[in-house]
Length: 97
Image 1 (cartoon, one colour):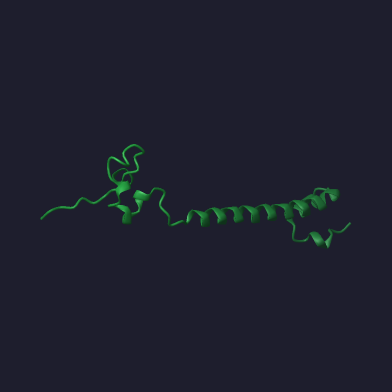
Image 2 (cartoon, helix red, strand yellow):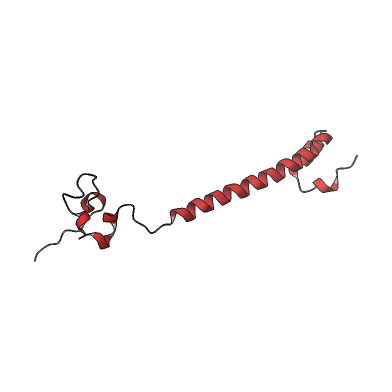
């Protein structure tokens, strides 16, 4: 019996046929298709995670440099939950010369 033409590009099916497993050829084709779908799904999940992580928002309002002088970012208002600018980012100190 000759190797079926439709399995020429499937190395799993070729190995199964060489080992004498004629009945498993269709399962090899199914597993090859399943592997492709799993890879496509995994790549899609990674792309979604990468794109969703690219956000230009600040977690706390006091992390935003434009809010450095806001009342909510000054002690004692922000001390209780430690969202003061000094806790969140390194603030350059103004030097008098």
